[in-house]
Amino acid sequence: MASKTTTFNKAPWYVLLLSAYPVVALYAANVTEVPLSDFWRMLLLSIGGGMALLLIFRLILKSWARAGLLTVILVFMVFAYGHVYNTLKVVPVLVPFVRHRLLLPAWGALTCLGLVLVTRPSAQPEKATPILNAVTLVALILPLVQIGINCVRTHQAQAEAPQQGLPGLVMPSDQMPPDIYYIILDSYGNAETLKKYMDFDNTEFLETLRAQGFYVAECSQANYNSTELSFVSSLNMNYLTAFGDAFTPGSTDRSHLSIYIKGNATRYTLSELGYQIVAFETGFYWSQWDDADLYLTPNRRVWKGWNEFEDLLVKTSLLRALYDMNILLQPQAETSPHYERVSYVLDTLKALPSMPGPKFVFVHLIMPHYPFDFGSNGEFIASWSSDSRESYLEGYRRQAIYISKVIPQVTAALIANSSTPPIIIIQGDHGPSYADNRTGRAGILNVYYLPKGAGDLYPGISPVNTFRLIFNTYFGGKFMLLDDVSYYSKISDPFTVTEVPNPCSGK
Image (cartoon, rainbow, N blue to C red; front, side):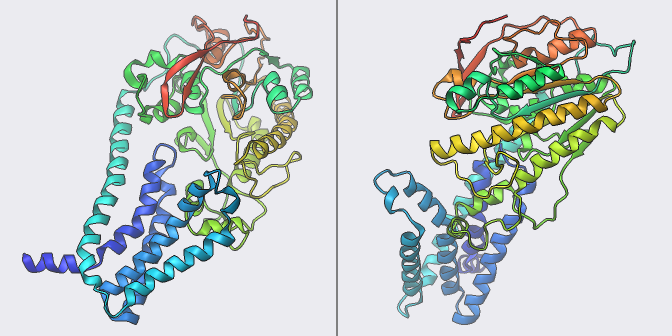
């Protein structure tokens, strides 16, 4: 037993552990935002690269201990660079001096110094091996535990979440049931917010929709100021306090959110009524209904581009310098994954009326939300930063202009090509960032195309009442409309909310 323990301590297992750690730790920090499928490619590449370096150095140096230390220094310096760069960039006094042309030589000198120290004849790397094995093992266990806890919480949330539709609803008997399109334009604010904070007048957009027959709820506010909370509320037709202890103030457990978004009351109800569920890839796994009856994704080659998790890993490593300097890793294609997805959704939506119905189409379009890779005419713009208020405003404004041009084209096609007049709901989930107050963040776009007319719609209707009204009007429901309330909470404390008054007129 002692011999086996000694052998284990002498082997540089820390190379394998440290090669995995940056990828695992980054995934753990974003475990509620990133699907597990986006994580494996970089994990395998990182481990493979680390082990390849270890073998190369072992052939050169004839020592596992020295080869291990050399490898671990290189792996550490590669993955630490982006974190150091990003940290220094937010220190005001250092901002003028944080440039890759200055940091890279210093980083290279530090790396060379470490390599020289390890390869000195007097160095005794064998003594460091058991310590590094233990330290890296403990370090890797921590994010693995975090990932495991999230898996357990997600499993519990799935067991607790509702798994059936609402009772008492019936399909209309006088005609073919209407297709329902629920289109979320992420961060699209209301007219007042856009004009006041984003320097964008969307009057022409709203007037075009009105001319097509849409009702514009001019005073609408989001029920919550974050996408996930907003979706849970609108799709389940209630405020979070109605779902028991799942969203207790002070809790930071977000595992229930994706469960209530993917398995929501509206979806289950329409499915049980006979609707086909159609959904698109969004880039955020908690809003991707990949188990829908029809789940639509753009065709892409595996290596055409990296996913959002891989992009984040690139920007927190030494590759950040190459990315920023437009060398090698800067996307060479004329698109990005985000640009590709949005374009695909906009094109595909127009063709969906030809698909036999009835169908409920859920669209979460990351527009005009960052990343800002659309120009005002739909052209691709690479690597637009949103690090400053000015760059955010410019990028947001361009994308708001573009999406305001193209959405009326989509709605015109949906209306013209549907055999039965469809229901079309277009909403923002919350207002834009950099709005100067909570009211600016609360105001949202909220428009309805209803075949039976505006009916019970009113200027201040909020998303929580959207499907209550739809079910009452078209499926014999008897749901009371709730008070339209908007809540604000911090990202770090999502379920501790304060009310945001609506400055606009109510009903």
